[in-house]
Image (cartoon, rainbow, N blue to C red; front, side, top):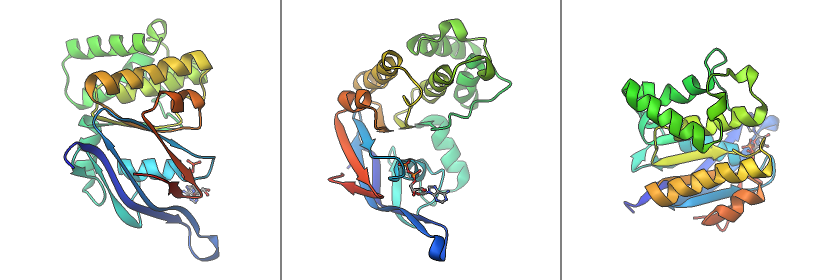
Length: 227
Ligand code: ADP
């Protein structure tokens, strides 16, 4: 369907070989429409990160396909996947790797620079998203001067600053207190409702599940009642 901005079909991935082989994900099918906020919920080790990485083209499945914004991600040339990440897709990594020598606002600005946005647009959008994640007073600080929760909010801001049509987020509230978590979730909720952004968020935080349109459960690499 054209309005399905996330279409993951039959994604399957194992790691290692022989006796050391771990099946991380089996035949995972998930779809989400424009404006939908879907939570992927499951215990640690259930396959959430694996699914998101395959969806984003950060890793390749053994079987199945990921389509984001109507474009095939799986087995696409690296240049196409990179272009997708600059334009259509925002990804919040669980480890939120920020660039150590750049300030919070410079980190957040990166996707806009990659897209060739003007200095004026960059200033405006960075200021807007810094305020939305409650970090306006920390714009000039480098990651090592920020708390874990502040760094996580920088990572969320960086994934959303270019207004992607699709965001994939891996435990984006893991380091946040409940008030800050609620504001980050509120931002994702608002972008979905107002801009039609589609969000697939891996989380076991009840604050995230409560805000979602739909919760998809995952256990031992298998989705329970997915699609
Ligand atoms: P979750 O995000 O739900 O914690 P993961 O997708 O990280 O789950 O992991 C699913 C399973 O795959 C786990 O058993 C994990 O140990 C295994 N796994 C994940 N990544 C790797 C890897 N790079 N090498 C080997 N095993 C891995």
